[in-house]
Length: 170
Image 1 (cartoon, rainbow, N blue to C red):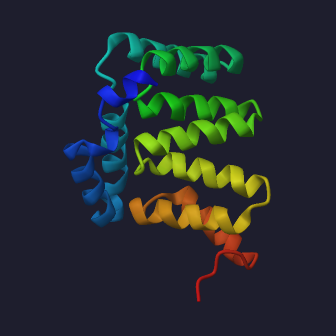
Image 2 (cartoon, one colour):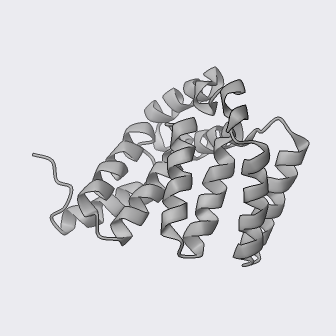
């Protein structure tokens, strides 16, 4: 990861920090728009090649060709090791392939580069819930909701764990 030191982490983008602050305090009717703006800001690679690899990987994933999607996302992360969304996209492909170990690794890399990537935190929580680490999953879902209180899937997952007696705070 020689190039990682020459690029700055995406979480340091002032525009993204400002959008996340707005999202935290937004009324429900504005949340979807702000979520899209945050995702758009995070997805800006600054490279036509990286954007093409991302598009091809996402297309392969949507077409159900997980192996090809992983190949495209791996090429992306090889060429842009400081681009958090490449790791996040590959983590999603690994998850769909039931490769939880590599998915966790990529989610951790995503979060090392962009600690505010609430969808990566949610994904990590979902995997931990799947493998029975319910308290850790609940902690991660709460973290998602601290960053994005409008994240419906995190709220539903946390509510489900609470109904089962997991993740309650005293």
